[in-house]
Image (cartoon, rainbow, N blue to C red; front, side, top):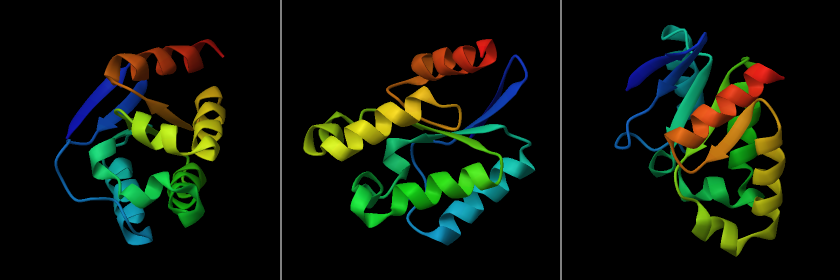
Length: 123
């Protein structure tokens, strides 16, 4: 895990390898660890999310993202989700809408995450 301060926005970057986030308890642990690190945003690698996260009907994405928002924590899913996007029009719409907001983003890499952080600073 790395903590990086992006001009006042503290980002907790989870390691690529580690426990998969698959349950409400996992989400609570994620949020608790972010709070302990005094992070404003958690960058979660795609590899750390249960594949069900990308199947919107499972409700997992909504639950995880809403819980983060409820605790005033931004979240970014970092990595290639092109296979998931190709398989689901609903997911494509969800990702596009999320990326327009300020709370949850889907970005291909850390450079794109930095661009999103810069965008919200201008808003």
